[in-house]
Structures are given as structure tokens and as C-alpha cells.
Image 1 (cartoon, rainbow, N blue to C red):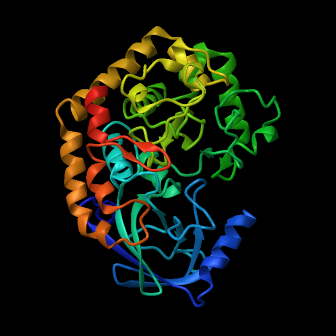
Image 2 (image 1 turned 120 degrees about the vertical axis):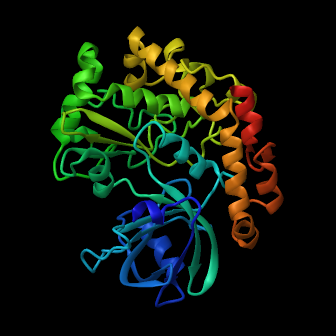
Length: 391
């Protein structure tokens, strides 16, 4: 059922009904307060009604109290326990900011699912009090249902690796042991999604940093190399390799932590920052085309990146990583499958993009950005312009 709901060919319809016209002010206030409390609403998903649903804004840079089109976190079982839609109790709707093409997130998840457990994703037309609010990406939540599906358990140590307050000049959720030996010092940088696990996380961090020869005992190394290969191949730097955020860790039944990708709306070089010394101040689109996939190994990182450097110091892991990159490029880019899929997705949502009066970029930018750089506050490279050169 979940696969059907997130089928990329299916445009979904979500209608939210708030009891007050001041709903935006209330949601802004809840977001500023930072407690992740929710506002009640009635929600229709593809015509099916759900009552007492909890609504809040989600995200970090994608949310603004001055913005009309904000991203939504919709919790169906907020009040009515076990309320769900086709087994789904939480919807994550992203507002497609920093992506004039509209396809970055959905396309990247589609590629990632070939190589590691990753969220399903498609599109939703969102209405609020019967007003069309815009076209959103509808991304499967990484939660206990997700890990049950892929890891056959749900109660092991589980973390979302995003700092409470992102420090653009700091370490964030990089898995270094810089915060000391007390696991409570790591609370601001990792959000626990399980009932327990802080000791497990600290022991993992300790092994990763101090006993690199034993990393394979506490980490699914191959899956981690796939994550790095996807991020570097598709220039997805709003991730561990950029500011050390936007990923999850789940401990499987073999006592190994597994990384899980998250928040891919700025892939294909829409975000161009990393703390590696070569590009500390950011890199250009031209740099992105030839960016060394061993940048964090061949250059000094200002801040620790043990999940990269301590794996790449092993020659076998380094060869596996480069082989994964070759696979991603051969199976998606060189054969032009990615560009055909991107064009297919754009054709599917074309009318919806035209009808979205709250979108951040023009319809012309949507049409152009598949192949050509679109300039706004920053430059967003054309996806094929970037990837054909990068391949």
C-alpha cells in the first residue's frame, strides 16, 4: 500500500482544513517556539477524511515566517491512535525550495533506492481551506515503519543526525568524538528516535574514531560507502559531506549502524559548501563538474569527518567506494537514464507547476533548469549540464 501511495506516476491530493483563518500565524509561532507542537486540523487524502490530525511546519532553511509556501509535517495519529492512510501515519511534504527543476528530490531518491534503503517519493497537490497552496514533494518518512520494512526490527537504537542549531562554522552531526566521553554531550547534535540508544551511539562513535580496524563490527561499511558514493556522484552536499547533517542511523539486528539518506532537495549541486579546505568558502558549478570524490581524503578537513576519512584510509574500502561511483554513473548517467527520467517527471507535473502560484521560481525556470543554469539568489545548475560533464 505504501508503495502504491508513493508511486512516482501518481499525483496525490491532500486537503487541510483549519478551524481558524489565523492558522499560518499559529504555525509560525509554533515553529519559532521550537517545541514541535502541532495544530489540529481535518485532512483529506485523495478524498478520504481524517480528523484531529496534528500539523506543523518542518525543516530548517526551507521554513520562514515570511514565506507563503512552507513545508508540512502531517501526523495522522496525533490524537486518534493508529489512525493511518494505507499504513502511513505521517506525511512529509517538502516545498521544493532551491530547485527550479522540481525533480531533484524525487529523482535522487529514485536513483538511491537502487543501491540502499531509501524513501519513496512523489508529488502532492496541497490545498488549505480549499485554496490550492502548491505542488509539494511527498517523501516517505524515515520512522519505525521504515526501519521495520528494511531492517526487520523497530526498537533498536535509532537517531536522526541533525543538530538542534546548525552551526555553519561548526562540527554538527559528524560522528567525531570531539564532544567528550559523556553521551549527554551529544544530545544537541543527534535526535534519538528510539526509547534507548545513547550508549550504543557513543560506543559507535568511540570505535569509529579510535579503533578504525574494528569499524566493520559496528557499521554497515558497504552501505555507508554507497551513501558517500551517491552524495559525491550526484553532488548532494546538504548532507554528511557538507555540513554533517541530513541523515539517519539505525542499528540493525547484527549490531551494526546503517546510514539512511534524508532531505535531497538540493542535490545536483544546488548546495555547494563543504568544510574540506579546498572549497571551504563554497565551490562553483564548474568546480562541481570535476569535484574529486576523494576531496575529504586528499585535502584537509577543517572539522573531523571520521565517517569519510577513517573509511577512505582503508585501501579496500576506497576501491569499493570508487567502484560504487562507477556503477552509479554507468547505470544512471552515461546511459542517459537519469535525463529521460527527469524529463518524464517534468512532463508528469507540468500542469501542476503552472498552477502553483506560490512556487519560488517561474515556469520558464522550471522548463529551463533540467538543462540550463537558472540564477536567482544563487545559481542552480542545469541537471544535465552538470551531470553529463561530471560523468
